[in-house]
Image (cartoon, rainbow, N blue to C red; front, side):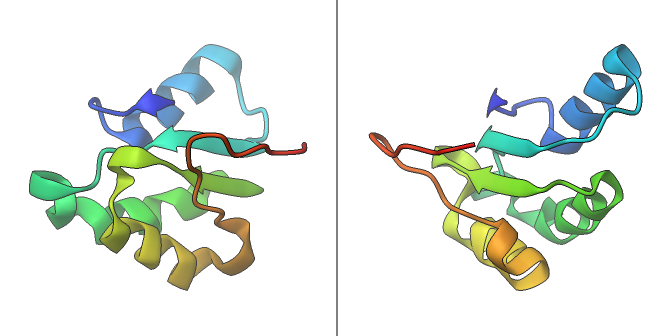
Length: 89
């Protein structure tokens, strides 16, 4: 998703609109939930559940608070990413 300035949930809704009801295997990128956007962390985490994502890989601008909230809700499905990391799919 790169950096989700439009809102990661909005990005996922747009993907569903454009590509139909295909499953989301993974969601990789920055979810833009740090700083001023921390106020929408709880709602965003709840909204993720409707998409039944297999693997949630938050990056750079997701922020530690949002990453922690995602880990609390989705457990082992959440794998924070970093530069140089390799992911086998």
